Length: 616
Image (cartoon, rainbow, N blue to C red; front, side, top):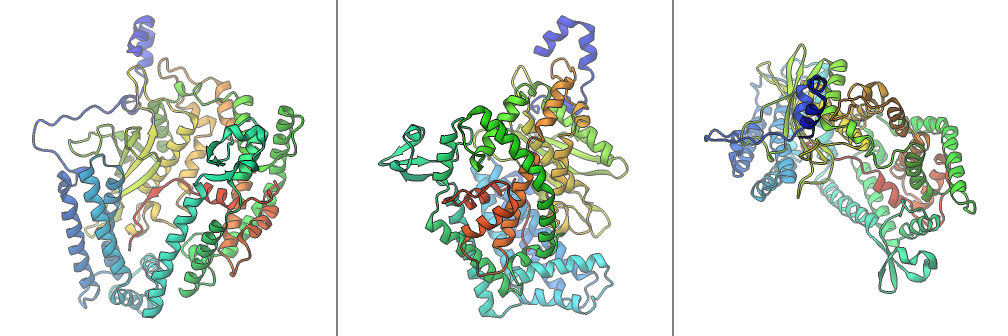
């Protein structure tokens, strides 16, 4: 209605402005139109006919189990007509097509009947995968074709993917004796339990005796009998003493946490050595692009050296800012960094909450910008596609066809972008179906879901995004485009099922585009007037992406170096002593005595969740 009123006020000039929105921008600047069905021709979820009802998950599960048994028989057939790795990939694909879909529906579907049926399917398929991962004859057949020659000629690609399947087998300890395999299962269970307990302890509130708090800060914390509860770091507090107190109390040493962490690391090391690796780091990096701990360490050492003088400039700026705010304050400390970073963005750059920029960053404008960027980079277009009744789990979902200029349709992206009751509050990418080359020469196009938590459009305006929301949109679209463009022969290595240290590269690359003024200028325009974002605002927005970037990167290098140290040679000394040593070498701020920053490190290391099938 506001657009219509503007048109009536401004006459023909507004008509010309309105016509400049693309069809894609227009679609995403409004909620998806309700899809009414007056016939019985509904389709199932994602067009899967079995999923016209929740009961269809049981049928899909049975079909996958039947197909798996048929493929197991094919691996042992003397008349096999195709490469062994192709049979294994079909087996993996048949299971992942059910497991991936079921995992998404379990998490995202608003109807409990669908969520429960999907959860049961996940459990059943997990049981099949566990059986396959410990299937001696399957392992021996795969190992035989790699050690000798397959019945049919194979390429270097075939052999590489076969080796990846073999490695997945051996991570489960299938090549070990029966007693050793039981030990692998026991170690994996222990690692899971210790890890869960440790992570739960990292985020749990700390109940600390009241007399340990300065009098002037006690009113900031909730009472717990004679204790006070500290629920976090109070990083947004303008009080230096409050931040310092919260930091020291929340990160106090905890013997039980130290026990959980030490046991988890010890069990990981035992598991790696049982499976034939010198350390857990060697095991984790086996199928990565970095390949070895030595390569990782060399990279981190060089990066640390290059970052040190740059990070020091950041810390000097923070120190001056802290002194200007409070002349009596002491030297810069770890609890100051988040607060001062936010202060700089707000005060120096007038960034605030990002509300000033939101009118120029409507969802439709951002999607138009993504379309322009992807067309320029990859010759692909994002086309808003019609959704059939029953195809989605919510009426607020968009569907995109990803179309290449030469190859045509590459796949589908379902966009579940808006907040709603009981929807998971996380930004992530789900693989529903991986891409792969089919036996008849055609290609199984990938299907993915992007889930965000954007504000719902109002009657007077579309969904307006903050700068951080734009970053998240570009990041998750990077995963989706990766899935679309990775036209691999085998689904076992398609899209985000690549080497784990490469999986985030396309999405992080997209974040850099979201910080490039040339890219932002191409789409950031006011949702009502379509006036482009002013140059001064654009400059401030882009500058905000680089505030204290060197010190932030140095912190990540510190986290990574600590990760390598914890998973290197064992036995370890006290984990906190290791942290102090690594921090002194790789981070520009000193260790705070009597704290265990490892709690903070591991919580911060949890990145965006990207759902893909980890099975077989």
